[in-house]
Image 1 (cartoon, one colour):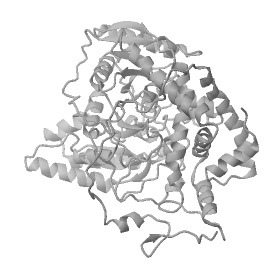
Image 2 (cartoon, rainbow over the protein chains, first blue to last red):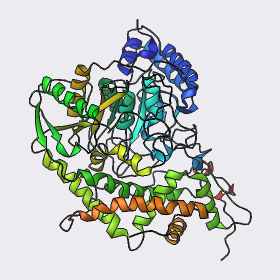
Image 3 (cartoon, one colour):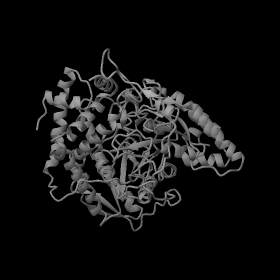
Image 4 (spheres, one colour):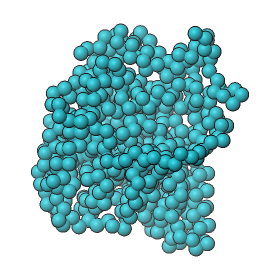
Length: 494
Length: 95
């Protein structure tokens, strides 16, 4: 029998239902994995008691013959952007050190309601601002993956959901929550050989999720495979009156409707995603993806998304603008850090607190956001960016006239080494070139592992779908998964 | 348009972030690089385009005008760096 720690959500669930093992055994297995994985620095807080309590409730419910929830007995990792009642939550920033939420985020509450337990809070890029997990105030997360060149250099798991990617790929947790503002679920999933799903904007409530850029932020699952993501998203999503942009729509049973038969589906290949200096291996993977989807019955069509090159610059106006507004709440008055120099007044306290509490990338984005929203520049930068965003969204609408889904690479490279890109903010931003356009348009998208590069590192393929058509995105992801034969796993060295 | 050190200090002040002289110096090239790069958006003809208001068409809901929350003062104050007599406490403000 496969060791419990190798199992994902679906297998854990059926193993518990069939009596192969108890939820308590599952929780204990992963709690031990968490303790053993401390060198990877993936967890900011460990909560074994939470995982054990949820397991006990599952075992009791099973003994009583009750119907078990979708996530019953599955201990998950929780990105530290989700407020968890009674468990310290910092968004990996010093400015929230010591903050213990008095309430539960809707997404985490939904997951617990479905029977999931929590192994702990996961490290991430500070306030989800970053693509390599190097902006955390509490140290880098290290990827379980290593290049096959014999070197032992530490690699990034990607970001901002880097802790989530590390624990799922290292089989330290069977699944984890992520959040995606410009690619923060999909890029780390691609870097670590796991599956990550960003739903349509509004599917998952943002209530209790620490805000970065509210018009872009969406929660989603990071798990072993497509089926596990479908199960977990089903447990996370749903209408929530406490989020004004929450979609008041029923949550489909994505898992039940999974089908990798793509007969009749048209898949668009956007020519603008063939970016300059794209590594040959990424291009080859893309071609392989096209063949796999054809094999599943789909028709391939060329499409054009003419404003693609403007997506990143628009994103780097809109996201910092929203961030500068959202992060104005950290003032040293109501929660988190307070830095009060001797004799300082209120204004000095604000400035000193924010200087001490925010990391360099967070400050950089607040400064950019403040500038583009300031008097005299608002129209030239912010309004123009929001207009370009309309054009980007219209590009997708036009593409849907000739196709149902889009296939692209997830990221322009495999995982890079920690420290390799930190000196150049712009080079780091370019990591999200393939994921940002669909974020700006609020569309659902998945990253599935497609293969390994020459150095033995995972590469991901991205499927983008129409708004609310998560099902087709899952199905095309499944078609790739069934054909890619991706079974590579990092060797345990930690 | 190019940003100088004075502008950086002004933005930092608007952002309520106390920055050192050295940090201000470092921000000048960084912000100029990023802002120079986003300025390519100016190439796009947007004269007939409305700015995006919502990515997914969604009506802003109204709720019943009733009290649904409250009596949670202690919870709200639980994380305050300093709370006194049921209030958030801040340094004395005398203008």
